Length: 124
Image (cartoon, rainbow, N blue to C red; front, side, top):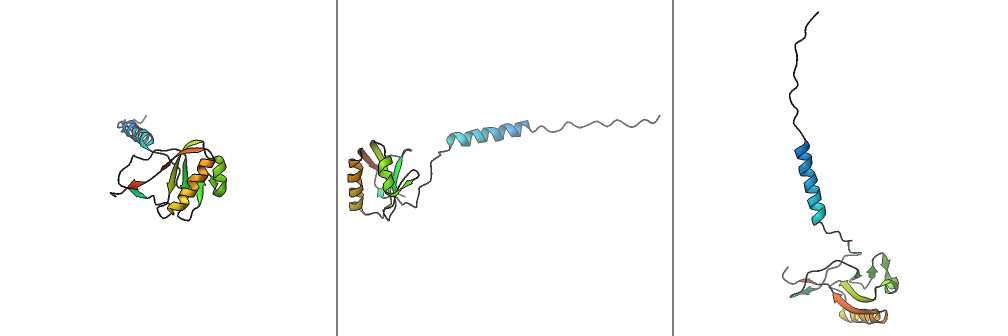
């Protein structure tokens, strides 16, 4: 009978610490991410000298051409779906202020009591 030499397997490096680090990074990025839907069209908000940070929530978007968007709705259909009470408006800086005033008047007719215009800081 022929005897073969014994080979010992070296202990394989454990991948558990690397998996733990990857999982912790995944949890960290998921917890710190802000998930917000993209704007329905390209909007450059007007600038302001001071203001509060923008909060998430329902937003009426207005393009420079006056196109309206609220969630998946576009055009005149947004007025029927708007919530009663407070509303945040994100209008393009190129949108005419008198047209914005007309839209705000229509919003009041549909039950919107308070309007907040989203701006960006002028120190950018």
